[in-house]
Length: 234
Image 1 (cartoon, rainbow, N blue to C red):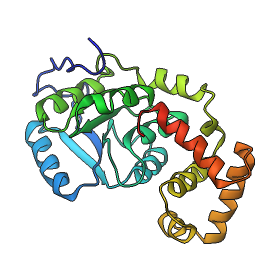
Image 2 (cartoon, one colour; image 1 turned 90 degrees about the horizontal axis):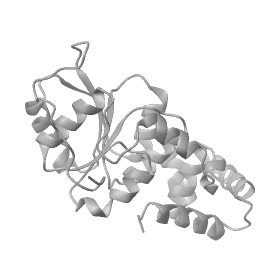
Image 3 (spheres, one colour; image 1 turned 90 degrees about the vertical axis):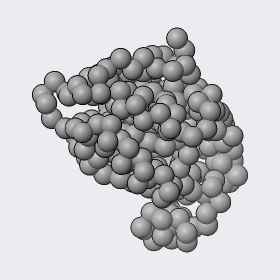
Image 4 (spheres, rainbow, N blue to C red; image 1 turned 180 degrees about the vertical axis):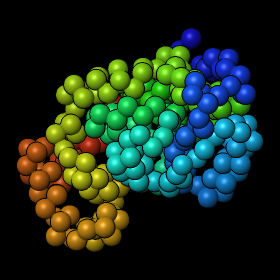
């Protein structure tokens, strides 16, 4: 069975983790019309579910998981977010060494994101509409079982950290700035989003030039675009 096929979800909906504790999930969903119904339906399907944090954007998800690495059993993320998309979130967490299992969900056909989810180091990708399948996959991930066709977090992190991507040379702050520049934000808007001064953003931009060995922001964006194309996002 390929990673794009429906996953094996044989776990009972009444099973709990080995220690009987709540299954702790960080939910990343930027659509306000979807967020509350999704939380409700997951709660109905999983009495032991505890959503420890609900986040609206990819940058927030990366920062949260790196600052609180033991706070959740699974990161459950929509694939299309308002700033950086799910695959970029997963790749950055794996590159930073995060071993939190990551399950992607989407309203689009799975084929749209399947290759990206695998390449980025996720542990599965499921349709947002299939709550029972999501619940079973969350339980499997809590027990260390990725969806068929996906690596474990440890294997994904090892692969990505040894990759030769030009993005590997940037710090998290520099990657944040480049992602937002590529998305069309000006320096003042980026400073507001990242809660820093425009001078700090300009310093990050100069460091991006130095680390990527480019002389213009257009060259840096071109490298970022090629990186995104690895994930079939363009």
